[in-house]
Amino acid sequence: MEKGVQRWFVNVSEWSPSGDEFYFLLSLLPPHEHSAITRFVKLEDRKRALVSRLLQYALVHEVLGIPFDEIIIKRTVEGKPYLEYNKQNLEFPNFNFNASHHGDYVAIASEPLCLVGLDIVSLLIPKQETTHDFIGNFSSYLTGLEWENIIKAGTSDDILGQFYRYWCLKEAFVKAIGAGMGYGLDKLEFHHNNWTNISIHVDGDELKQWRFSVSELGEKHWVSIARGHPQEAIESYRKVLNKVEFEEHEYHFGLQLPNRGFVLRKVGQLVPVSHRASY
Image 1 (spheres, rainbow, N blue to C red):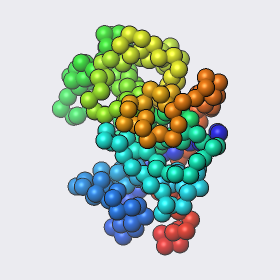
Image 2 (cartoon, one colour):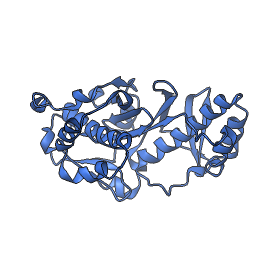
Image 3 (cartoon, rainbow, N blue to C red):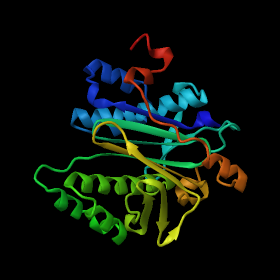
């Protein structure tokens, strides 16, 4: 099942598409995806949205072998994307994926069995704010332990890096279970040993069957991955998953699959082979 574990990213800051190129790539996607991209006014936001969608379709196409124009990706009421596919895939009993974009990068992660959540953060703050003022805006989303670890981290850069690690881990967990913006981030408390052996406590109780990682993704960006049991998805997301019930040994096997490193992809590599001549 290791093929189902994928980690891709694109550096959109290095991509400057012409109008024709942008709309050619947009035409590869189903019409219902277009408004989520063209609603943005700024080109940088449109680029991130377009590449995010392309990554989803390209990854499903490459890993599962579904023809690009037959891929159906829908979203739950909370906005969680999922693959609708009525052919049983025994190799990947619960194939799911998650994408994220912030700053220079857009990325996607997939898992064949475990839930997967992904989040990217760019270590930037508004120019008019100090680091302490900026992170203070988010103090209500952090536990006392997390806040103490952040403010005692050292320099302003250390404090900002510490804050963003906690933040992207919280977001990755929430995205993994399919929850929306209203989920209480303050209920989540992360423990770690210098950002290894990361664990999560929800309302004080440790969720032992989850795995987390956080690492640098290029200069001044962090990326986090959350992997957990499909049974812990919220109801609306659990309903659309292929399978949520697993024997303990099955789930343990899925959880222990190697957490691959991220592979850089160019935008042109997301175009299906059948359309590359036109691209």
